[in-house]
Amino acid sequence: KVHVIYAHPVPESLNAAAHQVVVETLTAKGWEVDDCDLYAEGFDPVLSEQERRDYHNTEINLAPVQGYVDRLRAADAVVFCHPIWNFGLPAILKGWHDRVLLPDIAFKMPQHEGETIKPGLQHIKRLGVFTTCGASRWLTMYIGAPGRRTLLRGVGLLLAPRARKVFAAHYLMDTAPRPSLERHLTRVAMKTDKLIAYRAPTAQGRVATT
Image (cartoon, rainbow, N blue to C red; front, side, top):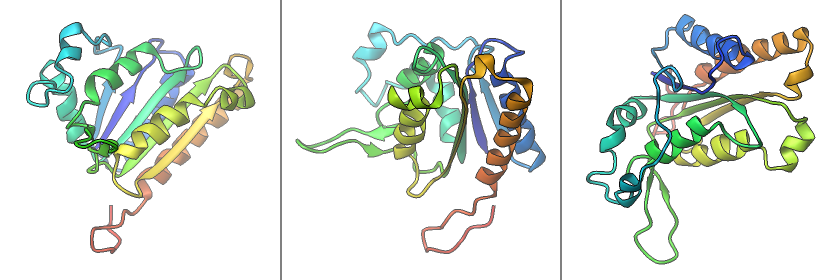
């Protein structure tokens, strides 16, 4: 099962087209797709005062977002489709991170001084990130490449060891000609196919068929 997290409010956007390509490619290959359109579902990105107070209480912290946590727990793969706005993730997607990627769900909190967090999403073996940027590639890299930093590297560290990861971004998209946009969609389809065609190592070191 693939959990697709989509964050863009405009149905005729390039992100919407990429999202459609991802879902169609996955479905055509026989994967079960849990498609989460954050805007269409009216996801509330605001971490409330009470949620923050309960954040480290792993017995109750997931209650406000139980449904979203259950969907993440049921996934073998996760794919993010989103733009980069103002050098960061859209607020609705950042809110999903703040509210759903909780202690004892996405990661294990340190128990002793000097320890760091430990991965909590090791059942997820594949991660895809498809994004668009108004800035150039060099400027995006200069400010830290949010799509790569927060998702590919940050969330990626919480997944299974050697989890398969794919990434595609379209830079300078606001002035890009149509052929360039179409090439991006082709690249998204190819990367999605590569993601699900991957054969993950099993605990015994053998190759598991998918």
